[in-house]
Length: 214
Image (tube, rainbow, N blue to C red; front, side):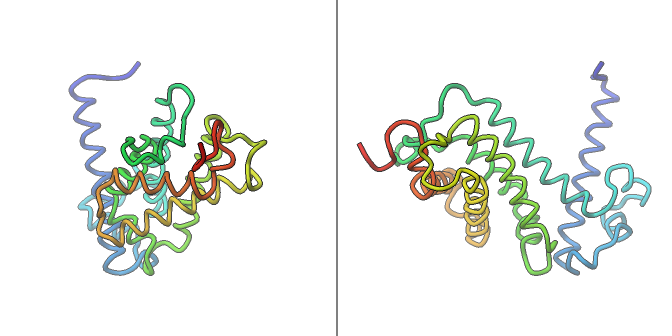
């Protein structure tokens, strides 16, 4: 049974604040020293918590990185769970159409954690971070394509290539947007992202008419 008492709520708020403080400490210290030179003791001191408190939430600094990526995965899966009926990606080519929620959710997460992504993907960040993000996106896209989008019989490339290539496209858009100072606004970038994917890779594998025809 879930404890919904005021005491439990206060504990949840306190827990969220501590986790956020440790995340921000990692961002600030990575900016100052580089990810490789940040220790657990450094993080605890910067966040204003005891070392034992750090270990109540995380095993090490890598675990903080995984926590942020877990947030990304959870947001994307929640959006996928809200899908109803077949997706019609060709409609995403219409400038007047709203971008799909999945693209908006991805970019919203990036926007909320912009400093984190800039630093972790930068020269002083975590060396394997690109691969970590790519792996999360590829796993998600593989499930999404198989269940909602991809007609394997019409794929213009081997279907196994689709998820990794689309993940790379998503990260490329993310990097460009971060370098651009998060401009233009999220909805416009989401439109560009899905248009690139529909036209560039998925056009021949989508159900219905081929993109750009009709």
